[in-house]
Image (cartoon, rainbow, N blue to C red; front, side):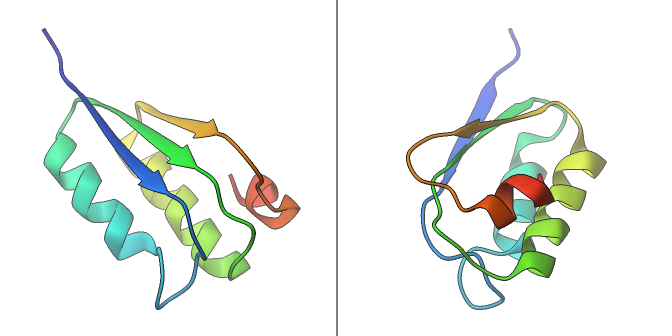
Length: 78
């Protein structure tokens, strides 16, 4: 049975907060398994959001669960 890796992004998305390096660590751990990212962020750097989206696209099999308040910038990036 395939396992599912879950993680949260629940704060500011930036080079010094949640970023693509953070996401890559979970995607690497997941291997080919499904990943669920629980996203609840009020803002951050747009280009860092795009970089995270690119990591999700490279991995494939990623579900982003948008919960709570999420800035419009992040919705456009994902």
